[in-house]
Image (cartoon, rainbow, N blue to C red; front, side):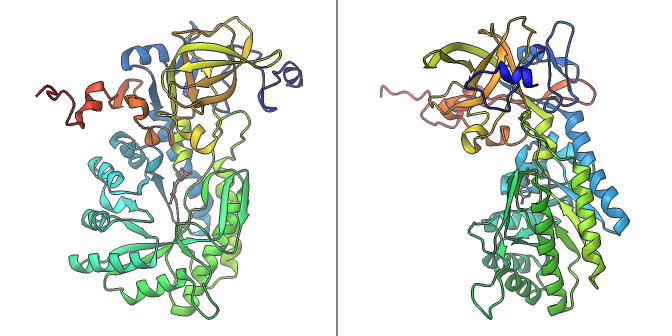
Amino acid sequence: MSEDTVTGHPLAPAWLRVPHDAAELDPAVFTGQYARDASGCVTVDGIPVTELAQRHGSPAYVVSERTFRSRARRVREAFDAALEPLGVQVAVYYASKALLCTSVARWAVAEGLGIDTASGGELAVALAAGVPGERIALHGNNKSAEELSAALDAGVGRIVVDSLPEVELLATLARQRGTRAPVMLRVTPGVHASTHEFIATAHEDQKFGLSLHAAADGEDSPALQAVAACLAQDDALELRGLHCHIGSQIFAAEGFAQAAERVLALRETVAGRWGLALPEIDLGGGHGVAYTAADSAREITDIAGDLASLLAKALETSQLPAPHLSFEPGRYIAGPSGCTVYTVGTVKTVTVSPGVQRRYVSVDGGMSDNARPVLYDADYTAVLANRVSPEAPVLSRVVGKHCESGDVVVKDVYLPGDVHRGDLLVVPVTGAYCWSLSSNYNWLPRPGIVAVGEDGVPREIVRRESMADLLARDPGAGADTTS
Ligand SMILES: *Cc1c(COP(=O)(O)O)cnc(C)c1O
């Protein structure tokens, strides 16, 4: 590795290794579904990506059903195994905003997970998949009356209430229907975590949740006010428990631990004040995955183990029965399950400073199918996928075809020197927050999603958009402009 670094390009980040084997698929990001076949082509669960691109077009999102389902299972089993000995029941909800269509919802449910939704649209897709209402949760800081009504009518298992006005709105809607709404209260534990860091703050300046801190001396915190408001209207609201979600793409364990401690403390306060042991705590999602060799994702079994120790300690000093715990992983399940297959177009080398060059490899998509580099400065990696090249690796930047210079797919990656028009690249770990954030910028049709099924058969689970789809919503398209 140190030898590689010596031969590295001056523009390359320190973590980027020069690949010594052109066929290499780094197992940190190319999880079990990937291999190269005898001709050197990358395969997904045995299917060559050349075949997928030919049959389904390019760019294409390719999802491994087997990987998605095994990751869903792994989360559930890890939390079950760690927490069951403490007498804690576990529920896992797949955070569907990461990637959702009816097939994906069915995979999650088949693995024993519920579905987290955060809008009327996500709720509609989950219901269209046949997910039973009681296994669906509805989130959101600004749910409309229509969305809350749809959730009540579907009999969702929980509505995660985010504000005091929402308590009142939901109670009114439930009363109109003669039902009781199952409620979790989203609290902001004053912990923010992302990737390698977490920060704990006393006060919150963000749109989500109910603060644990009072606005003024002698006043209850918004979280406690919401508990009181729910209990005062228990004809219409059934307060099930407390919820928190501290961020996304988290590797540091301290953030989860700190949040769990604060939410458990609130449960004690509620018990002290109202003599009520809230039955459930939801600790949200946010479990990180590796996108490049620079990331080292913690095993979910370690995260579950840490949480179990913390909980065991908290329960020792508590009079309350153990709560049920729930989790909401999205990225952890969907991210590594998917990749994007692109076709190379223009290849251009530019001189950055005297003697220092960077090669730009343009592909047939970009920020419209992967907004994360632009939104979050996210890093990805890529490999030449349709063949193995004998040429030496060259530092490359993979860019899209949009009219933005920030339209980058992979900031820095070594690709073989002879990468040329018509080659295929695979960018791994695009299963979460890529398709779901996709747009029609520059009027590009959005790619479909091709799933390689557990039976080894590839199928479109979302159809690619056509030019006709793009024009279909424009009433002026094709209209006679001469009269
Ligand atoms: C986004 C979100 C999740 C999932 O986050 P991941 O980082 O994908 O695991 C879970 N819960 C809530 C409330 C969210 O907003």
